[in-house]
Length: 184
Image (cartoon, rainbow, N blue to C red; front, side, top):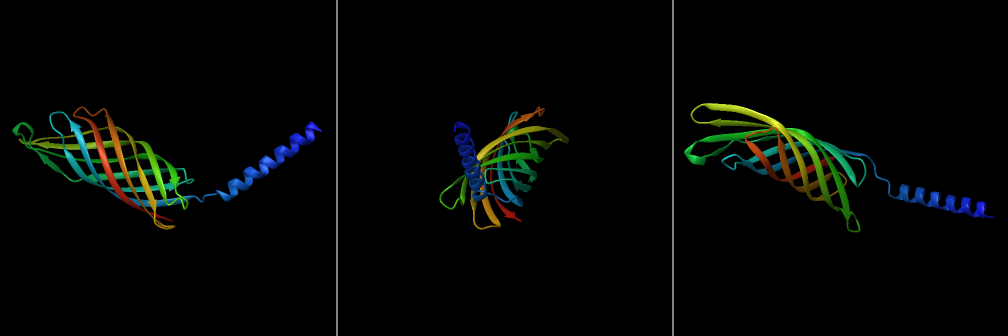
């Protein structure tokens, strides 16, 4: 009798889990996105800020998890710390992992957390005629939210802290981004 009860209970539980999994299924969703990014960098002796454009290609594997690769390029920024003209810009590329927490009845709004790694290349020019590129890794951690307009279009806002490794002139970066995504 105990064996029959055990097998019946197991069958009911497995059937219930399968039914919940089918009801909660999510189709793989690749996307392409574009962001505007405002960043403030903590550098030695000065604090440059940059406006950048970022292109992202990614996919959502479930409504809770996704990955993406990114490439970004900033405009040049001119600063005058200590009376010296310094012009900086950067480019970055890398990989991010994203976790979503859908909220609301229709699950159109989601909180998100992101972590990733990227390579950052800073181009620094100072007068008189010093020019150098410095590159290293940036470890990215952030959070934000995402809103789903319809099946194809979504928007998101993210704040990230980027901690640099192997960049002697730059310590860390704060990025504030707003972007749109098109899901296929």
